[in-house]
Length: 411
Ligand SMILES: [Zn+2]
Image (cartoon, rainbow, N blue to C red):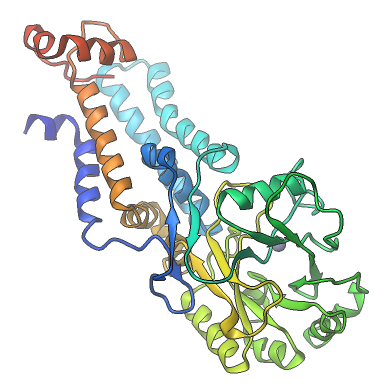
């Protein structure tokens, strides 16, 4: 009872970890069938699992649609600040102390967001038993105007390699990558491509494509869709990118097919594209199946974030509905199904449901370690520190028994 009253956050977390284990989400979902693939799984490195609370939190911050990210960050910031202020004012009324303590939580949240974007860390990789190449259809380097500075081809290749990709198309904005002169020292294939910006649409062109007079595909949808046959003429394949076709052309996708588009992205990990709703995804899959068009997943990596939300297993250059399989992280797929304002609750909920048993064990271990550490008696005025934990390991129960009544408000 005492533990429950003194450590409500830890106890709530334990309850949530047990509750979310009742209906866990699979590590991966086949974005076409909606079920877990039998022949592909996520391979999580040992360090990723050891530090699962951090790994999973950073992943959860990465797989956020833009509107949900805004809601979550604003609400969490306010809650953390309020919690800090209440805690501080219960033992001191000096306003400087209250403000300082209230800013700790929001500052930690900012640090986590920055870490999700730039901190190198162990990441899961796709392990596929089936035939085919693990491939990404859409990724950027610093040759794109919005690519991360210093995000060169070798860095892009290393990012993909860490996550189990064997190949990626390089599709910078309106800059053709011709695939000649691949950088040295990389062990995945960098394939030629480009992402054209045309009338209210981005079109990924893959294969040995060349420059196009982009202006001739401007002003109307009717002019824009002609780019599909122009790309075909060059021997390339065209893929309509997210979020543009969802945002700007959702009613005109039949015209895309008639004009000769070769495929549609159905998952794209960019924050603006992650909100793509499942019902429209199903419609696009239906259209693609009836016209024998490809459906693909795209990391759309620009150099920010350490993890992809989607992989493809296919053959480079393959065409048609049945040539490509799309495996996505379930947290990415639910972004379009839940209203933005629910994100402060639904993001942690789906994150915890997505834990593997080993990640769940890691989370519980960390909760116990932190509980033990915080429950240890300490001398008057002594702040929390590793020394206490170390000392407790050596002195154990004897120290606990000899200590005065437990500190009511361990800091
Ligand atoms: Zn892109």
